[in-house]
Length: 526
Image 1 (cartoon, rainbow, N blue to C red):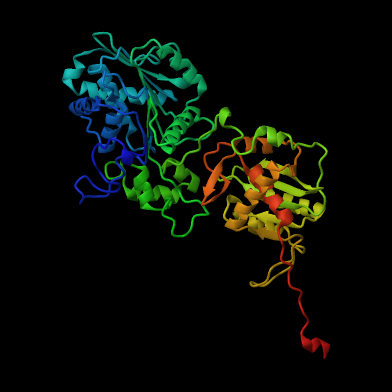
Image 2 (cartoon, one colour):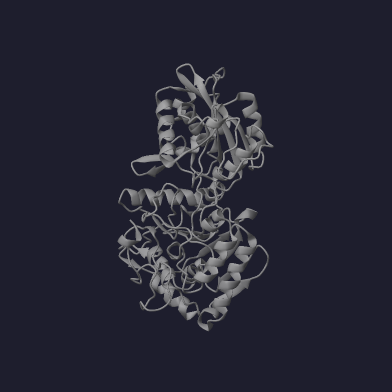
């Protein structure tokens, strides 16, 4: 269920102010939300208690508490797990503090365990809660001690209730049986931590886990990816998850194949995308400050840190989701070779951390595909392309100008000049050792479809190279109208070997326009 079909808290429309005439506000309800049904909520108690302690919560923070603390008819939690995925500096800490205050002073939870990836984060959270309690005499008098010993930080009440603060990175927390577990910085949370935590909660009556953090950062975001997958599956199938409340503020950015007038995706440079991903705009964030971030951060960094566009690893069970492992391995042939002429292709990861040069050529009725190089960075690509061209004399190099590799077309052109010292005019093209074919969107779609069909029909041969197998294991589809292409975002693996061989195979068959021959002026024959 999306937030539009969910329990509505403040009734605010995206990008509006509470009164309708004030400054622009971020979305107070998330664009992605799923939650089990509930008949009542302890969230209002947490909101009111936080206000008594001097913590005034934004409408979006109140919405999270109302949904996350929903109750079934018997008074038990409707959601065993609550996940909040929101960009940095929006105020997720206020949600944590309100939930912990409720657990201590209203909910009667015997042990509340607050963990973070780093000790300094847990320590800072401890100090914030301590200040709130000390500032409210009615709450402060119920405290027996504020534990300050390093590694033992916590707040203990006279009745024995305890709020502990620990760092997961130090191996702490194993064996604790918390009635409520707060997992801060959940974008750095893997199986080891979850394996240590969940079994300890089996004997607890009506426990609850809260995950809070920002967008996924790849391989480290194992548990966040798992939660997000459950939420998206429920939304896609038009149902709720029976035990998970998941709320995510993020933009859904344009892809390069989007038409100019696309309204289904968000422009990363727009204020609308910022408002969609940052509920604190108009409260503690401003569009002006965000604009400064946009001009300073890399495109990928800005998308992740401010627009909530994360990278989420796939679980083993999700591997080989597009092309089956058995199908691919059946096509492996350690003796396979390419016939001349061959085609080469280049691809680069979105963050430009790795690049691949791939090749393809006929092998009887099949086409042999191969990863020639897969290395970190991009500064090596042009020189290597020159070497391969001189050795293989390929029919073409294939480049996608709209992809991250597009920025290398100029370098590749310079590297492939037949005469490096040749001077050409502004309207002239240099003579190249091999032509560079730049794909269009329809070519990308056709290349992927042709590669897939060739694999399924057994018309591909390969050497069972690890980089290509890894890319295929983690590959996902990205819908393009009624067709699809390889998804670059959120796959958690380097898919440049797969994109490269897909384009190189297409290059084996593409028609290449021959350069027009220069005709001598008639005067020369007079």
